[in-house]
Image (cartoon, rainbow, N blue to C red; front, side, top):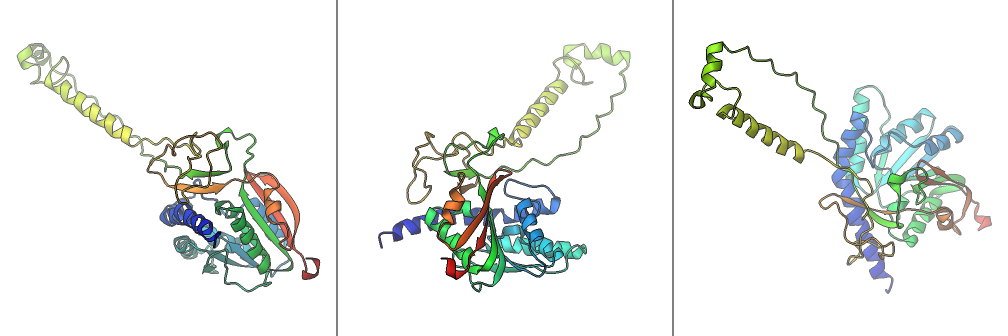
Length: 341
């Protein structure tokens, strides 16, 4: 009973800063995937570590992707190409619908025939059969869980799904970001603003044609103050005043359309809020709320070296390898037989 308020606060944090954000951004992610441009939460197909896992597995394996998101169709397509069957599970229905729409688009173009198998479920209580899968992937999911206990529960659920000898692959954002100063973290628990979209690129319009030269008598009459605005042109007449007003309006409009995208602002670690807004205690020295008001924030726990392997300890998993890849820590493990634990 004493742990229940903390668990409810952690679940409320994930609901507010993870589930709702991805539900609202699911249409934008689907449009970005259709256009072929990746965003801060997109990935163009499975990462290299997932491709390596699928290549190492023998043909005919059953794969479970916990927290599959909108890229479930891409993983299903890649798994089918290597003779495997993938099942995706995610709690966000909008992301699953985006993955299904992606499959329909590819099917209409003749690029993918097999429909992905998708299940809406909480990855901490996944309604899939125990010891039924040859491999389980959990890509960019565990860093959204708000406590170490919940992260261990996810890894324990993945271990439950694996048959003895089955492979597990887990990836999470890394605290260590060598060579990437724009991704420097000052604490492990933080709220990351979703990057604002790039403004649409409008084609450059051709310059307007030059007006024909005016006759000499018009130039002489326009030099008179009373007749300066009658023929347009130079001086401080009404014509130039209108042009200046138009240009000022254009400048004000263009300033509203500019975006300044900063993936990790200096105040990315917010102060301690109430009732599960954030789990950071402010020890990193950052004061104040996030600077990007009005932008959607996602909760992240960035992992240090060895932290993933420590979370997988005493769960019936044999950690084979932990490595750093493209700003993420990756963990490869194997399910041990019951006699070993």
